[in-house]
Amino acid sequence: GYVLPWGQMSFWGATVITNLLSAMPYVGTTLVEWVWGGFAIDNATLTRFFTIHFMLPFIIMGTSMVHLLFLHETGSNNPTGLNSSTDKIPFHPYYFYKDLLGILLMLTCLLSLALFSPNLLGDPENFSPANPLVTPPHIKPEWYFLFAYAILRSIPNK
Image 1 (tube, rainbow, N blue to C red):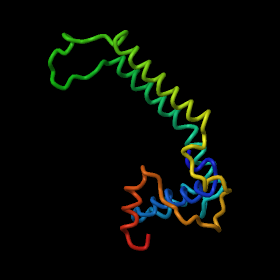
Image 2 (cartoon, helix red, strand yellow; image 1 turned 90 degrees about the vertical axis):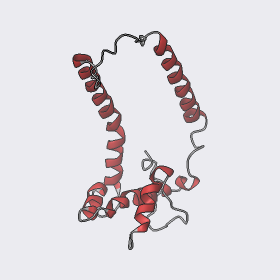
Image 3 (cartoon, helix red, strand yellow; image 1 turned 180 degrees about the vertical axis):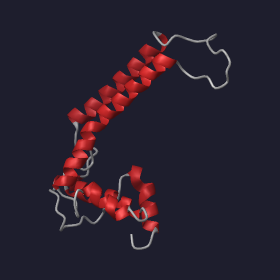
């Protein structure tokens, strides 16, 4: 979702993040061009990232449902081989209400943040339209990509 606003920081963030793939030997540049959908970040890249952003929740839900189906059909595996059904606590009502309360609290916080102050966590530089000819002076990846960025910066000519 970081690329989807298509602002200045979105464009350059996508450039930095996708160029992390170029550090892979032999296939890096080809992989970057494949992710971009061309030789530069353009509308094809935005369409690809939007498609991934839209489809990923459905893929996760589908694999979770298949996992639960297999778990329901075959049961859980016990690697110790011991009978573990002696001291079980039922999920409902003991854990169900606790989990429901946690989900409702998190959903309330997320909706409050998204509806009442949507620009609180955004970068002010991202309000200007994407322009590949103007580079912002303080480009750095988000915290969850800093490890990969440090590895990339340790490689010469990258």
